[in-house]
Length: 425
Image (cartoon, rainbow, N blue to C red; front, top):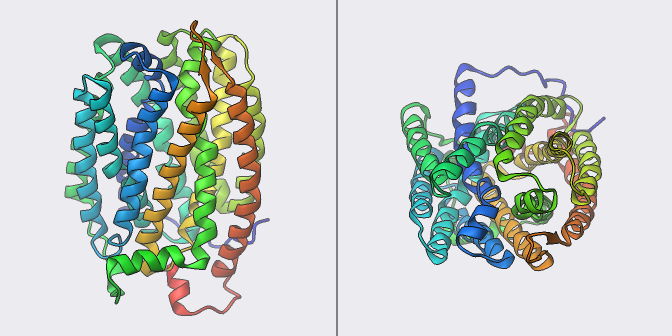
């Protein structure tokens, strides 16, 4: 049993908390859909714009690198403003960047759109997680993360299939127009219903933003979580850009069948994600992480070594593999929210998000260098990506163990701690 298990893990949500959860989930949905839709559109984009594997990987990583840079730049300011205002500011920029992607007619214009979208969209996750940490107690965060991370599943059930349908009918630009419209509606909901989030501002920072950023980065308690976040991202992003080309060209699944795969996989995820969140709060975040890692390692090995199979077998493998991956991400994210002090929370989350994005971009670039696409479309060395992913997952098991022990020392009521430390959890 994890040391971080808390006897009060059934703390109910208030009415306002129940309102905040879907708002943050919808924000995550639009951001995740914008990023994830690049993968299923990969084969279409590569053929329409005549891109090779390295160019497509560069288009994917452009978002990640720009998001990483903006995360670092925003970190020093993240704890000096109302988080609601920050959320709206960056969400507006995200909408503009996505619109540029929708209007792109050349590869270079698409790259500009991905960079702008990354600059603003890459910070939204860290702001959302900081809001979660501000408004929800530690014993509630596993459940909250389970619901917020359902953005991945909902994007698979509704967003990606609808986007692919629109792309097949009207062109690859259509999904981006869909995201723009939905994001504008979501911004209106935030303006109307989300209250200012200013608790962190009660502790006035005596340092300027640059000093605050430097102080947060140099904090030895935060450095291991930063490294772990980067490795978690490398393990999660490496296969993503080339999964759809692999399915179409190596497994001989039709482009028209992709919506069915995403719908059924997403429905399975919608069922399992809340259960994973509850499990991480009840049995412990680390045991859930380890179980998810073992399952993910097995399924990644199977998936990356597949030869042509019936579509129903691919769907089952996808569902189980995604359940394993999310069983890692949900408890790991919940653990990370307990690391920073209250006055550092926004900066910590921004830096964490920045490292996540940069690591994802590096993973995409590495994947593009490893993968070779033959003239007939087949991808070579996809299994090599799987072996690298598995190795990184094994390392993360040991790193999360150390982080879990640190968090246990903070949340264990039998350990005497300064009020400032207790408040941060």
